[in-house]
Every structure is written in C-alpha cells, then in structure tokens.
Length: 337
Image (tube, rainbow, N blue to C red; front, side, top):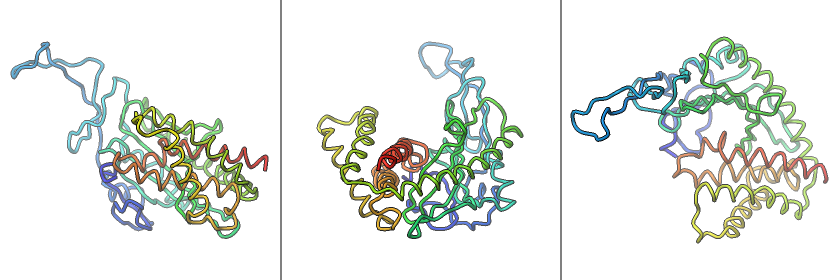
C-alpha cells in the first residue's frame, strides 16, 4: 500500500493504512493541497526518438511527431504518454472545485493525496448532509474528486456515502443519466467546469436524499438465508470470473475454491462485521449489502496492498464496481421480500 500512496494529508481519525500527515478539519483547499504535498505542476512535453535503427553513443534524436509525455515539473518524472490534444489539469486548479463550498460551510476538507507516484490525485470533502437509520446507524456524505495525470483517463467526481460504524464506502454516480460526472482532458480547467462543479454539489445533495430512501427501504426488508445465498452467488460468480481472466490466476486455484472462500468472507461479514448487530442491518438486505461492502473495502483490500491498488479500487476500481452492483442487486431482492 505504501507504494500506492505517495503523499497524503487527512483530518480526523488516522486512515486504515496509517499513512499521511494529520491536519485540522478547518483547512482551506489551498492549505490541504500544500499539506498533502500536491503543490506541483505538470506539463506536456514533446517526445523524441532516435534517427537511426540501432542505438549508439552519438545517435541523433528527432521529434516523435504527435507524441508527448505528461511530466511532473518538480522532478521531471514521466507520468504518462499522451497525444497532441491532451490538456493538463493542474492540481491547484482542480482544488478550486472545493473552494466556494468550503468557504460557505457546505463542506470540509477531509483527505487529499497522490497515488501511483503522482499519476492519480484526489481530494475528499465531507458534506454537511447526513442521516441515521434505526439503531443509530449513521451515514455521512462525501464528495470525491479524482484527477488523473494519465492520458485516456478523465477527471471524475463521485458522491460517496460512508457508513460511520465500519467506514464502508459506496461510490455513487453523479448525473441524471446514472453515469459518473467526468471531464476529459480536452479543454482547460475553466469557469465552465467550475459551474459544472456547482451543479455536481447540488446533484450530490439530491443523491444523498435518494440514498437515504434506498437504504431505509433495504433496512426495512428481511433477507431470508436462501435468498442471501442466491444474492452472493449472482453477484460474485461473474466478478470472480472477470478477476481471474485479468489476473491470469493459475489453474491450481480452482474457481469453486476461490468462490467459496470469497462467499464465506461475505457470509461472515454479514453476521460479524462492525454494525452487523444494529437494528437496521440484522437480518435485512441493508445488512447483506454491507457484508459485501465490508469485504470489498476491508478484507479484499488487505490482499491488494502488495499490488498498490487498494485505495483506488475502493473508490473507482473493481471493488467499487462490485459495490454498485451489490446495491442494485440487493434492491431487486428486497422488492420481492
């Protein structure tokens, strides 16, 4: 995990990975940027190749037309290759997203940092909106901005409710069509994007109300053991097949064994994870959903530390996809309960 989090600052409790610089929750976006070690810029620089087919000490260089590199200016590290039309987003400009909302008290800066040696920059702000389910099961709202310095990846904004009792996260899409709010690196980070940021905050408040309605519904519907087994099988089997294909898992790890291990982890989490005994979760579809999110956020990311992708996967990667599918699937099952 240490290889994934390059620099980081956080307000409040120490994160699960134990990394980062502690700060006050009264920091401005500019102060958080500085504390998180993100006060650097990037530039698009031309790429060069050799004139001759064989390398030698005095070989000449020629511009590789149409090819560039995204380079961090402070240490000249290459973050990605890119084309002619790529427009870099500076960290300081990205964090302007938060400025108006922090200054008027609509949110507080929570964490910020750099992943994958500077390829991914994130900022997370806590919204004022929150709610409680029966038994004191508190859900707080957050807004995440992910700004990659990698060609082909867009700046992404996500609404992220977090269940306080166990720190489970559920990254939900912003936008009326159900898609993520995304900004491609094809234009400058200007006032038009800032207006879209204001719209995103309004959407996040709507999403929080929708999520409250959905979670209240899930917590009111009892989940039969046989239906939970079907839910786990329907959710995990396709995901594990995709995972095996991507990771080229050896044939000496049978699919049935891998499925049974993960399914057992989810079963255990439904019954034993933090908050499992709360009124809202015990024996309900809300509890079943949180069994999945707990495994994705805590159990599986332990195994991903060596790959350096745990934090990214929790918010934006494969684990986040599983959690969104689990929410939809749990809702489908709850409607028939």
